[in-house]
Image (cartoon, rainbow, N blue to C red; front, top):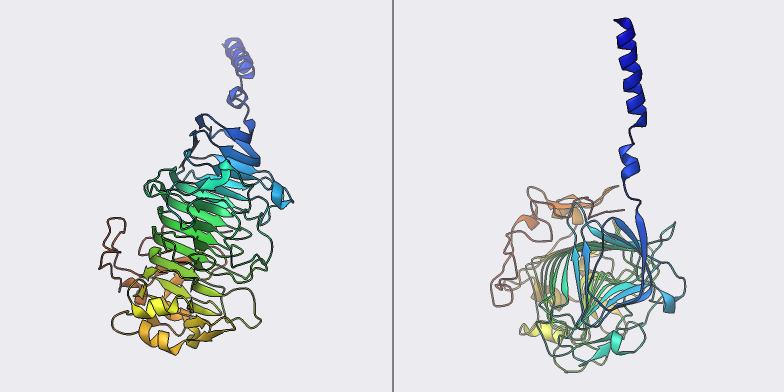
Length: 453
């Protein structure tokens, strides 16, 4: 009996030794390079590594579809004119179909990644701008870089659960702030309201995080994290709607002349060419670095409204910016005080210096504005100046890991929102009771998508 048992064991061992390792049957991961022009409908594969090389244009009305879990590695180049960009030209479309668990990620291919390793994801549409047709700044002037038109509902595709890292390399340091910035981060130029955008994080861009250059596109659940210039930059007649935005910085950068959470500008002059920039925004949380600034940096305002912009901003939380919470200029201050085309209502506003919660840029200097403060805090506008950021009672405004901007019990942000009136009663807006980007459920909590690093 022992002989038979021994024989069985030998045969079993021989069979197990000949059995293939399941891992050895898996196909090797492919690497492909995306470069030049994409002129036909293309669907990427999440199991392929993609290298984005140079200036890549999706054109000829082609569609580029990127499935959940795909990573695009943008080739690093130290020369601004040769920075990697992906450009979706007018008539073409991009569909980024990420999920919270399997986001689509655009990042640098450098071994040690740094701000500005590559340029931008640029989408060009045919929606109205106040310059008619323009060319994306920082890219060669050609038909492939044109944007703008007359179709307010133009459709450039859809983006869900996307993270962009280490872009913004085309922009020079101290870029001229009197003209439209060169493309950086997610750059939306003349993009129409038929385009769907939600759950996008832009982090460590060397310049702007999000750029809305004209157009009418609406977007929700956007995060700008530690970018070098404005987290949300609005120009040339943008008239879309935005809700649930986070602008968060742990430190200043040396890149921009003046870095803001939100900056809105209508055009260089400014002119009265329609459309005038008029973003309609609700539920923003803008947080600057912890503590009072003792040595002046490039950090400026949480919200800077300039160059003829009209705007409507409600139900938001602003804290810890050194130069102020809201700043207007000589062209935008009269519009806001008139209370006709612009409004700033039901917001909680903190600044490093309480007197600077509301400021006025009078060209020669930036000064506290007591008249604007009185106007903003009256019973019509219902803004509140918050003396200390701790009074906002957010769960973990600063932490060694990710912030948690959820309002705790007793926080003034738990209530006080107002969506009355034609701008905010639109079906686009989710009418929540809280103020700021985050309510009882923290959609920006650390995840495969929201990476706070």
